[in-house]
Every structure is written in structure tokens, then in C-alpha cells.
Image (cartoon, rainbow, N blue to C red; front, side, top):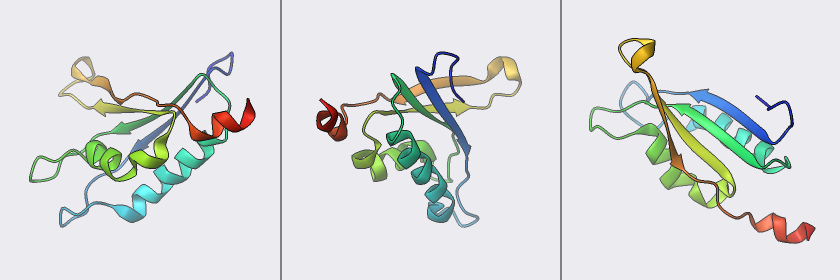
Length: 108
């Protein structure tokens, strides 16, 4: 998604833990690909929205994603979308603010 003035770009993803409760590395590779594409875009805000999923231990897929890949996320914000019992109870929260990008210094 792109805002009408091109200042905000967002990508939405929805993944679940594997059948045996493992991190879905193969599926997550498409989110890493999205991070790469977002890194190539000039925009004020770059957002990756995940519909969150929790394993049997109560671990958040979004939080584990951030722990594993924080080093490459740079200026990408990570948002968590939680599905409620009805749409009135759905919620969204920013889990990771965008940080300074190493490549911005190259274009100064």
C-alpha cells in the first residue's frame, strides 16, 4: 500500500507458527524480501504489518521476527495486528519504531 503522496509505504503479512510450533523460516523469507524492497524506497514511513500469532509457549511470532532480524530492519516500522472476537475488538500496535538507516548517509 502507498499513500496518495507517496510518503507512507506499507506491506501486510500474515503467518502462523509451524504445525510443530517452530518458527516458519521459509514463510518468513517473503517478509525479508519485503524488507529488502522497502529499503530501496524513499518514503517518510515504511511499515511492515504482521497479523500476529502465538505458539503454545505464548511467544509472539512478530516479537521473535524482530529479535532475529532487527539488524536488517533499519527504518522499517513493525506493526502488530491482533484479531479480536469481532472486528470491533481488533487492535493494532507499533512494536518497533523505524531507526536510522545506514544507507541514508550515502546519499547526503
